[in-house]
Image (spheres, rainbow, N blue to C red):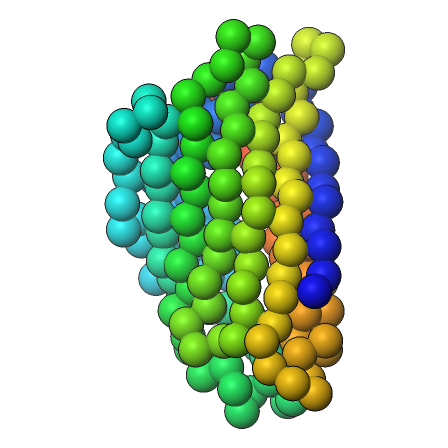
Length: 166
C-alpha cells in the first residue's frame, strides 16, 4: 500500500475554490487538460446531507508500463467520484474521493478538504493506493502514486490559473 498526502494553496477563499472544483463541468475540463479522452459527467447531484456528489468518467490517456499491460486493458475507463459534505461554519468543505480504473486491480481513494488558511484556502488530499495482485503489485502502486502526484500538481496549477482568471 502507498500513501498520498498532498496540499495545494490558493489565494482565494474556500468557497471560490469549492465552487470551481465542485462543478462537474469544470471536472470534465480538468480531465481533458490532464490528457483524458472523452471525459463526461455521469452524475452531479446534491446528497441528502446537503453535500454534493460528482462522478466523472474518461478513457485513460496514461500509457501503462510493460509489466502492467497484461493486467490493465489499454484504453480503459477511469471513474472519479467526489462526495463532498456541506460547508462547515468556518468555510471548510470536506469529503471523500476515489478513482476506479476498470480492469485494474487497484483501490485508490481517501479524503479531501478545502479549508481556510489566512486570506486563501488550502486543498488537502489524503489517501492510499493498494494493488491486489501478487509480485507486481508494489510496482503498480508506485506507478499509480507517481501518476496521481503528477496529476494533482498539474490540477492545482490549472485550478489556480482558473481562479485567477475569475
